[in-house]
Length: 254
Image 1 (cartoon, one colour):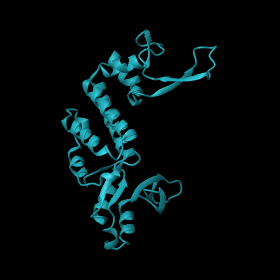
Image 2: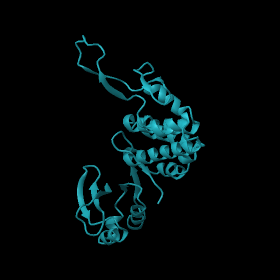
Image 3: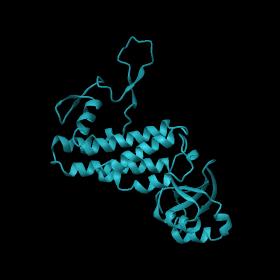
């Protein structure tokens, strides 16, 4: 399976980025183009005969429009797929958009504004995440550092200067999510998708993904529901064998 990706170039005289063509399964480089500009891609792929290009079934890349336009032109029978990293990246962008929209509706200096502005990093932490702290028992035979849940309701509290009281990460996150139902839904959806990528298997991934997409379609959060109808329809046409814990693809409309 071909994969398109770009990397920052320090020496290319034609572009800030060079375009790398990879074998997705082995992650080995196949070729390196001097730029990711449309004409450079057209010139390169024009050198391959149509009968060879028609054999390509899947192309993995990000959502860069030029890649999508060029792939549609030169690989008419291929499914353009967005890999799991870029799907999660897009969901995180949508979550940020919901947070910023919510923050713009609050009064600067208010508790809500403070949480959305200065505690938003809590939205990016997985619900079951761990953190390392010093062992509170100085006589313990265990290692000096121990791992505890970040969002332990009974976790250690620190003095919060804004609220002028003692709070832990769990309590701050609960206050943050209580500000907006849209923010809560966006965060839960992102966490659900993240868990799907970590623990999904070929046996259950297809059914679980359909549930995720159905929930997105029902969502009233505009940042979440704006671009899910076509990927859901196209998913039915894709090879379910390519949906696994190690490699996930969402077909995107050209």
